[in-house]
Image 1: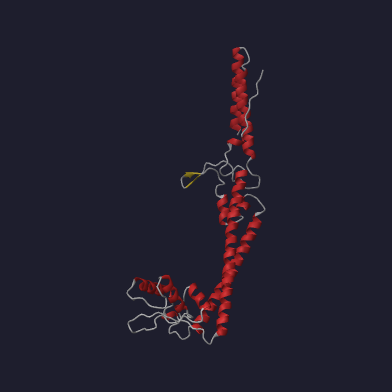
Image 2: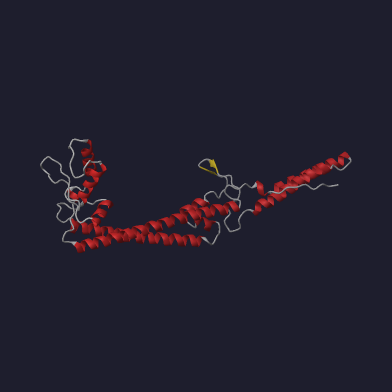
Length: 296
């Protein structure tokens, strides 16, 4: 900055000297020289004024590089810091509201962990009830099914058999429509556009094979059979456990979404603050003021 002032004074002196040697004052030369001096001085003051006064000065002009690429200024990473840790960017900028972002983050993360833990416990409980009660008669009943499988167990008293004529070489789907597999077989016949869902068409026909393919993809196989007969109390407990697991899972998703929104808001907040203070993406030339003073 001292160098700019010296150069400005030298310009003024040169203009004045030229005017004296010519024998008359050169108004335009002096005006330009003074204008340069004032423009540099005022522009320098204006540039200095946009640097934040909070103990952290990320907006100072920087010529550093990152991975060989020139960095526009030294504050480019502050919004990224807020995206990673909500409130961190605000802390670096000297803003007290970083406490609010940290409080929201702590609340959301803590409640997410609590809800997820509660949901996991309920999942283990309804799986244990299914294994030890509804599937107790199935050899090797330790297989774990998908969520849709356990939801179907909640809504149906029994699964029904997969093949009514197993061991005969002829595949015969379950026809008891009160069971899960029987309901699937009815839906398969309806979706395959049978002329009469109660009368089998030729087993080699396209519509029959389409129904068999649908049934094979959606019906419960022998290793996943279940039956809640004579266990109504346990089935009611199973249903309540399912409801608690669903509620805990829903709460966990909501807290996780709140944490994600908190990250986004903190990042946007830091970015906007830097823009207003002349940081990331804000050009410095727009803050400089210049002018000329004619001398007669």
